[in-house]
Length: 186
Length: 186
DNA sequence: TTAATCATGTAACACGTTACATGATTGC
DNA sequence: GCAATCATGTAACGTGTTACATGATTAA
Image (tube, rainbow over all chains, first blue to last red; front, side, top):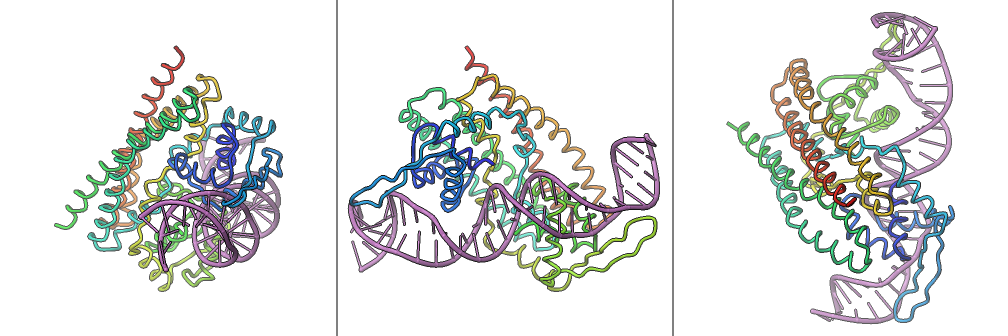
């Protein structure tokens, strides 16, 4: 149950609307957790019924009305409990789940060139993400100024550090894979 | 839809039971795709209704009876189509989904030592997997002998190569993270 | 005698994905 | 005039998780 706790985590900083939360997810948390808009609205509803959140309609003119969610004391308690769980599920933290790798695994049934096209596309995307990481670090700094919380920023940096190592590693793998596949053609 | 295609991929080598397929997943495919036993039985049922598979009950004495699944011509067609899809979903191939990272992201709300415990556990598991990779390569070689298909083995190696880079990278990240967190205590 | 291996699943629920629906305002 | 931004969701379906149920044989 991480989406709920991710939402709690953001709402612990300050009250937000579903729309804002969706953007927060896409802007910053999407690095390690992806969620659809429709899913966010659904979860917010469930969490309000659970008593973890409260909402209030804000009437706007010249813009659609909006529903502002705030975390409750119960919600904060739930967040704290989740954060201090002793079962950290390290196993899933290190598990790869990739339909791309599955396809590659079975690509002996196809021509080598098809695998090469796949791996080259992978390399390109990995390169793009390597370049994106510098923006990510900037985003963290500016977010940090808004939220004005130095300690929080440190932990965001820590997760970004994973990206700093992960994406170049992916490029390196692709490079080796391309050489390997080229070798199969001879 | 990768679980279905993973099952098709294995059944394309040779007929197997749900029990065998479960073990194959746990032994070799679990590196990039994890599936529960109950899920495998459910999917096999659906796939048989789709006409991708056929099954036959094998009566055994001194062991429970078993249901042997074989891929049909329709199933092979579906597998080939899936393998040659032009939309390779590279995006999800590079996306990390990790409740561990999410927790770390929000760990500014806790004491530094709790984060350190988490990261140290992560490091240990990553180290274990680095060591495990040599076994994985052996497993690939021996599986290759059974299936007796050199070309297939090459592609298995390619996915294993990802692990060869990924797990040491994870250890490296953990080492840096530990230094970083230790620094926060002063 | 206890755990592992062999072998099958169902049921209920949680979570993820895709398509659809609405509609005003603002900037190019 | 057209796309983007703001803002809310529902419905249906697909996939993943957890708990439960059964029961014989074999090795430590």
